[in-house]
Length: 273
Image (spheres, rainbow, N blue to C red):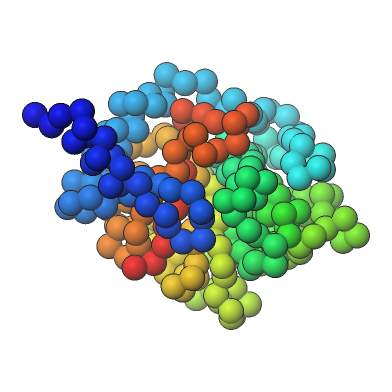
């Protein structure tokens, strides 16, 4: 049986810096890839117990809008709750993972762990657009992407919240279907960061998502993915497939914005091998 000191040393060895994030994250690939993915999901469900936690602590999905303060601005995100129950429709309302990721970016910039000024960012599955809006307010050159039928709400939220005279960065919207060849503007040059919230939700979409991540990422690209802990099978499948081409680390909640933490949400950083 391992001693307390050995366990501390083992934990410390798993803490590494990945990509452009200055904080240390817990490295997932420690031993066999499939075992690491299974161990990670078992650990999350065992420690965080997401099914026992209050869902949507930061979001009222029945409301027509979500108001949140970020980067010295009051952001109003329009939602379409009437579309929530429509089969195949995603991105019509916000989820906690988007709020967590957006506020994490703000907190990381404020604490010196990230620098987004002038950096190119591509956001996947932008939905209502909160994360991309916050990234643009932090000085990034953001391209928010989603499926064609999500464009109207996404563009409306960009126009509502990002006024050119008050903006340190920029934001544009592009259509992108995962698995398809991306528009040249997305990959020339390759982005410094790729962001995604609640993009790991369907086993059928995992390989297309990873294909798109591979197309978007170079050796200097850092990926941040935050997601709701809903289905351990889907998450394990994603992690097992992702670790074939990416080094994956989990961001501990102690590094998130202190007012925006949730046991129902997990955040990963990926960098291309």
